[in-house]
Length: 222
Ligand code: MG
Ligand code: ZN
Image (cartoon, rainbow, N blue to C red):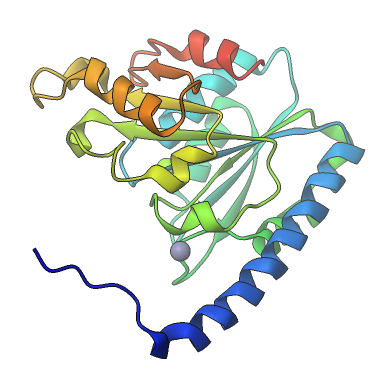
């Protein structure tokens, strides 16, 4: 089989990209410092469109809204659908429309944080734009990363996303009730995850019913 690798002509692009990524990392560090100064714990939530990120956030807000003052940043290209749903559950929400950008970055999150009353918050969920490739390269300053994959995305979502998972605090495998129909082996997904990040907790959830959500909350230490 033939495999194509990047060639030397692309090195200049790579250098430009490196300085961009470096700048983003600095902004992420500043964001985290700002959150720390206000004793806010932030959790970055990554997953493809339709994996169940918003529904899981909604469920967690319903469980935790008596215990913490919660806010959410909802990243999305153009819509406010997710933000509206999370707000209904009882969190203060700032929508970040990224336009054509397929990920949040340190700068966008910094702008959102400036608009919030940080002194009145304890916990922040940051829902990234729905994709599992580039958000991994753009940390936003969160303390923990939760990755969501759904069994409806097929059996290879875990093995195909080693970079994102290598820095995850927890993996939620959502829509577990559909595993059999989708012919996805949950044990195999867990093994795949262990091959990438040996001690990462893997929680099977059904966000619609709330199954697995208490376990997820416990795993995140909330
Ligand atoms: Mg969503
Ligand atoms: Zn992107």
